[in-house]
Amino acid sequence: MFESLSNKLQGIFDRLAQRGLLTEADVDTALREVRLALLEADVNLSVAKDFIKRVRERAIGAEVLKALKPGQMVIKIVHEELLETLGEPGKLNLNGPSPRVIMLVGLQGSGKTTTAAKLALRIRREGRRPYLIAADVYRPAAVDQIKALGKQLDIPVYDEGTSAAPPDIAARGLKVATEAGASVVIIDTAGRLQIDDRLMSELEAIKNRTNPAEILLVADAMTGQEAVKIAEGFHQRIAVTGLILTKLDGDARGGAAISMRAVTGVPIKFIGVGEKTDALDVFYPDRMAQRILGMGDVMSLIEKAQETFDQKEAERLGRKFLRAEFNLDDFLQQMRQVKKMGPISSLLGMIPGMGKLKEQINEEEADTTFRKIEALICSMTKEERRNPKVLDARRKKRVARGAGYTNNPKNPERELEGIQEINALLKQFKEMQRMMKMIKGGNLDIRRLLGRN
Image (cartoon, rainbow, N blue to C red; front, side, top):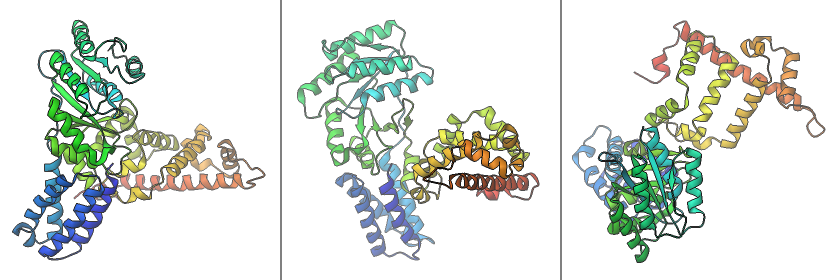
């Protein structure tokens, strides 16, 4: 997400940082480029102009022109104003008498039904009892879709098919959910245009009959410049309380996130980052600002690791690592855990200074390399994994063939290719062992290795 904007801004800031004292003309030139980068990322024109105006007012002041490193001071100001534009973190309003009602609204195709299921799953993981109401009677198979998702996640769904009026379905569904002891009710409404008066009136009726604590506008992050009109239209009619932006994993621009927050004044509460039912993340403005400016997102990386890694297994591997007893079985286990965290390019984007490196990563090649390593290690015996030194020429041939490196008419040197892959793997593993021994022997400053003072 935001790759295009992030790359352009990093280029602008790199040039600024190389200069000494800045003149007002230098600042204006840089901000013209920033404005263009925002517009190309689909940030609304008025939002971009207001942002640049605020940055310029501060950037041509004494705090920059008299600073020892004026280029870095401009970057700091852009970061702070970006945070101002993205707003404060928004939490769901779930305090009060149960059940609390959450109403999802938006255009058709924005991902409301899938988001309803994702939100219900997240709420259940927080220890609450969610209940879904299928109030989308217009889209073919919408009711079937939410019922299927509910069954998959073991979350109850209230539906009346497609014959009843949505306000009636919502009201009766709320009554059933209350009797069932639900603590949170999520209403999935049909997609509609903000200019369709009849359908917007229907949303007003649902709102009046269910008294929702939250009305969340679910919007496709790739909406582009139209995002502002959509957000304004829904907000004026039903007073949305928050935003959920979907498909941020597939959008290289992401300007809708900045624009919609700015024009509505309501917080972005969640972002959809994938198709899986657990791919709904809390939106943290500070982390997003850091990623846009190429500063990484270490906190999200740590949280992702905590969610993915088995704590006991991580501690076991850590102890073995520090005792320099790490073997190929452990190496493979570690790789599998890292792979669960997501695409390598996405992980690199969370590490400060690695934003540009991720562009050089070919996901298909990285996945192919992992599968090769996995096949090779799985083709070894237990003894060979625990003690790779026993892998002589004969054993390497056997391992290569077991991993699929068998000679054929089209590639008579396929087996040799496999042996070369094994040698490369062993070389990488030996380098890791060498580092472990240095740590164990006290010859390596771990704090310096991690880039800490």
